[in-house]
Length: 539
Ligand code: BGP
Image 1 (tube, rainbow, N blue to C red):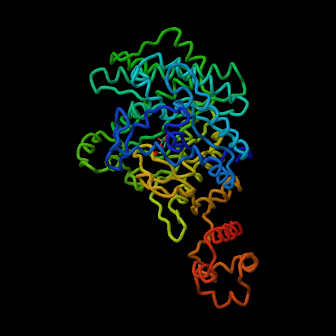
Image 2 (image 1 turned 90 degrees about the horizontal axis):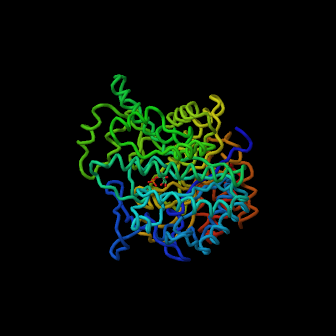
Image 3 (image 1 turned 180 degrees about the vertical axis):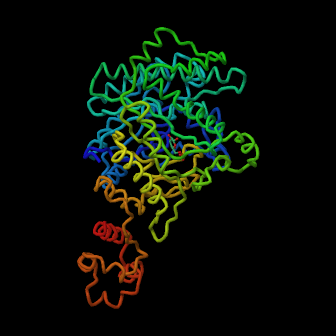
């Protein structure tokens, strides 16, 4: 692994910041999504309704806690931190008037990221288009959005060009296929023009992105701008060539977006298909020029799962009962699924790193990968071995792609280093973090941050540049004194920092640390400090 490999974590403004209506911010599209569950989707409302709960309004209050949160990430040794800039803080009213208060917030956030030794990676638009555009023009269905986006991007890129080198234009640009409102704020009727309109929206996004890439390169050649694609690799459900063909065409949908942004033009196949079905967007000569001059510098992508397709997919999907998870119908029998039904496929990760690199020959950046799972707090500890297991396997495969296969990867920012609101369901209990946040699905709780076992594990991974991936023994308040005393250095710490001495320790050997803490009336802060010191020794 290169010494400058960018290990870190990724979040998005709308899922973390909260503070949805302060310092001049207007509503974003995501501010109007209610809370959902794994089996019932989030609802979109036209205004904030009193009897509904909108989890993104307060999220985890990162707007106010970023200093403490970033300090924890620094402790893990992060080299890179990805977040987005909420458009609705910068141009809240869609009238070209900039909100200086919003910029001030990002001035200090970005300074803080840098102060903590991390390279900022900024997503310009991450599922948080100002809602005013949906009201005025049905958002990205209207080509006027291109200039609005370029203005927004210009404002932030000029302001932060000396501080931020890596930029992404649209988060998961291809997610527009799965939901036009959730991704870019367009309410699209499921009528005969659906596909034509979908392609029109995509074309607007492509042009806007390409203009921003060109603008960035012209204003500062050091800036690197990437696309961001949601990767959901499809496998054929068996070796029937017809199923293989189906999976191939599904994957082509993904490449449709990658081709335009990386190669600077629509592929012949895409043009042919759009012509044949009479759904071609208006692609002027000038547009072609813009696309050609706005090729991205690198490819970033999210990777969580793969899926399996066969010609019987529609039949399978039609059998899914109300309330059941759709993902199960297309799950791979060789893979286990997460609590939310997402098939976990570490080897698939190596596969997509290879295929993407082969196709475009551009550096890759893994900007999202992680496990959304339910965590339980036991005696102040969170033993998330399942998360460590998931990440360990995925990082191992990524390292094979880099070290054995020769794929060029700039960095890995896992989603999400701290628990934040889930985008798809709006739940808090779908947790990804190394840092636990004490809030529930209704936003109730203290908001307190706690380190999970994965926190110590990831710290070690970064420190060793990926060499130490094994899950080390972790000391918790449940550990028995006799088990930890055999670890070199532990006895010294216990006798130095606590009222314990060798004589006292002897009869306590059969006890758990929590009992010892109680006997010696150690307060919670002292207990946590001691556990931190002990785990420092172990790792
Ligand atoms: C990606 C989005 C993120 C994030 C992640 C996990 O598609 O870019 O915003 O949310 O998925 O998904 P979820 O939060 O729904 O579990």
